Image (cartoon, rainbow, N blue to C red):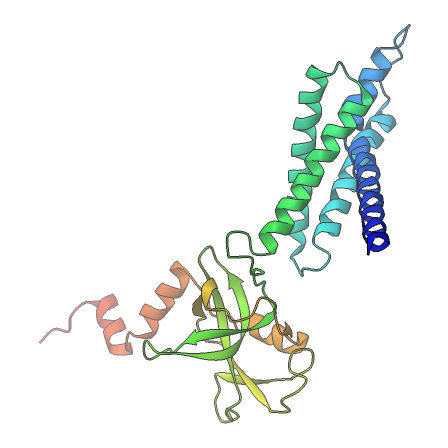
Length: 276
């Protein structure tokens, strides 16, 4: 038993060492735009300022590293391309603030600059992982668009709720917009489409249909019955759902008001009341 404990302690020590090495290297790369000019100015005699090409490299390397940190953090979560750019921008901003703070405290020691920058990048990485893992949502992983989950879904015509599979369309602050999946035959309905079982239902053998072209149902985060998704929505079906997503906002409200106006009412609104 003692030997197993020693082995686990050794393994933990190796992991901690590797984490320190990797994130210190990340911090070193992120700190280059501040550290290198300081080192050049501290030489006797001072070296010339960086050329345009060197300046581009000094600022291009941190951008590439920040994008790498964003990709590493989100590798297991399907995310839109702009989320990687936002994540990289946050990493760059946090690391630059940490470097400037360390520069005023430790007299431009490279180890201090890279350590502060690496710590800031690591905290950004852990914060995003914590949020994606559920955050304040009781440790439940936060659903993302294109995933299939099991949840207690509300009826459209009443206040009742029943457990159903559903496709996540958009997560909000307090609830998730979903489209319900059912095993009842909906081939005769224009507002449903067949959804293959590939990737999310490998055991039931039942055929399934999902709503399409309808406004999403709102499911609070606490109504999701599992901590992990059943799987991804099949790509052909997901493309159909996105293509027929109803419009939202002012344009949708205006369109809905117009569709409820009869031709006679429209003519009267334009030409005025009919003279008798």
